[in-house]
Image (cartoon, rainbow, N blue to C red; front, side):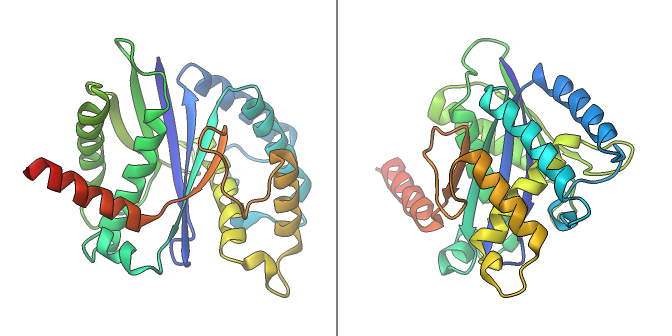
Length: 258
């Protein structure tokens, strides 16, 4: 079976970094895009325009609620899944994780999220592959995306005996003529989670519309965004402990050297 994984990040300058991945059977992707196009048209929103967390306001509140309702309808029908990692960037271990390089640490966390996503997919049969789409961003190291593809394929071959599962890792735009509409949904979801996990919802004068969207999202989810969810949940939030990953890597190197 073929899958598409669509990713974005939020709160890169906050204490808790949020990265999210929307996992879609490849066949469902164009169908969801057509539905979202029609929904945005009904809500008088331009297709090229960007739905995003920073635009949540009283003016757009009801429209964003309609979009979330549409998304959760597909989530509950098992047409897609959503996974989020929450990472405390304030810990020393996070700096160690990237050997002092912030960009390297960021992509290592992305690697872990994507690997976890693919561990749970039905990709065993011949011809299976995964296309990964990341929100387009400038990187200091120009070969980040090819390197991410190579390291993911190597890890999946080593751990799961799966050959060349990652077909490619490609950038996508979140607005404009070549927009990837589903990235916009990821932006809103991780924005809401980041708002809660960084405590912005408790600050005096917190944006009314954002608090209302969070309440509505929690109602649809049936859970509070402060809490992690079960690993098998279709909407999974997990606090990723970088220190545990570092220790696991050390044990792996030790076994390999024996």
